[in-house]
Each structure stands twice: as C-alpha cells, then as structure tokens.
Length: 58
Image (cartoon, rainbow, N blue to C red; front, side):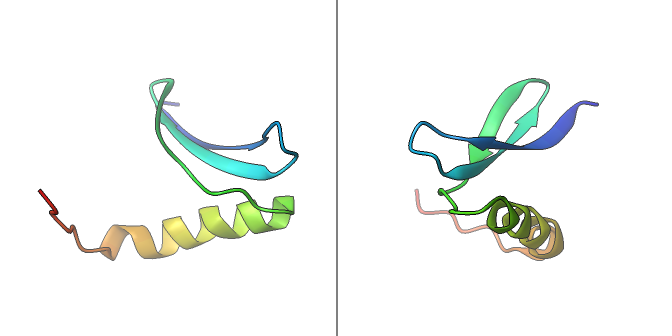
C-alpha cells in the first residue's frame, strides 16, 4: 500500500496519527490522550479532507 494512517504512542505517552505516503511522513497530528481520540482524528480527516479548501498563505 502506497499510503496509510498510523496510530502510535509518543514519548509523552500520547497517541498521535501520522499519514505516510511511500514511507514518507506527510503530516502528523497533535497528541490525544486516548487511542479512540486518534481514531476519531483519522475518521474526521477522511470525512472532511476531500472537500477542504486550500488556503495559500504565501
């Protein structure tokens, strides 16, 4: 699979999500206190991401 979401636990003990494409990390999230919170972030990105506007702040 070329792209995937990963849930992992950071050094502070929080759950985070990273999105990888061809093993390169494209983005990661803030920390969540529960794994369910991290999964909710993934679900929200999948639901809302395709229609999100692009904001160019350059």
